[in-house]
Length: 220
Image 1 (cartoon, helix red, strand yellow):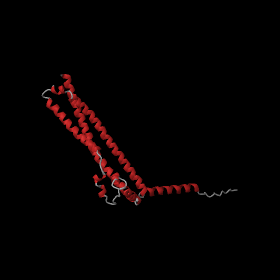
Image 2 (tube, helix red, strand yellow):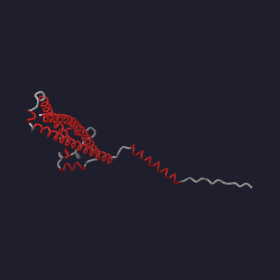
Image 3 (spheres, helix red, strand yellow):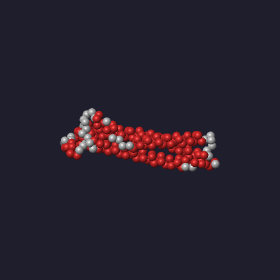
Image 4 (cartoon, helix red, strand yellow):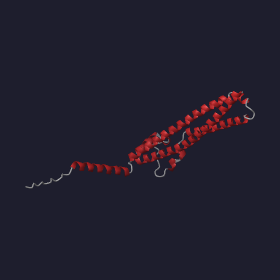
């Protein structure tokens, strides 16, 4: 006698379908977030992060300029030690004296030049120097965030300006500040590059002078 078996229908796994739908919704939300423009508060946070990063870079550039001045001071101290021993210069061979004195003059001139570049890197710069307040194309800023423009307000007028401020105006002003910081950083690093290039030249000249005068002192 033949025995018949009836296959039972396979029930759908509702848990797997629900997890799949959730995953697809999450992926769709991630795609929408990646493609949408940032909101006003998100734009504010992003711009403030850019401004904070710019200020840290400005502080780093100033620190590098001060460090270069310290190194230059140490080199100049060594050269001054040579100059303080006048008998070494007077005892120079007549064939070498013009060359070594000429190197010393060049060293002194370059030292003054590269100190100027250090001052150019460290000097304060104002927002009005770049003309950004006058050249802002899309929206003229109200000057609520930058210290230089805040100082032009009376206290009551500044409070009234904040009472009527809109988020798009504030974001437009932070854009100007971030752009100004980028220009400031570019100028600082141009001066800093000249300063460190010159510092390498001064190291070579100072080493040459120290070796030359030391050799002369040992042979006399």
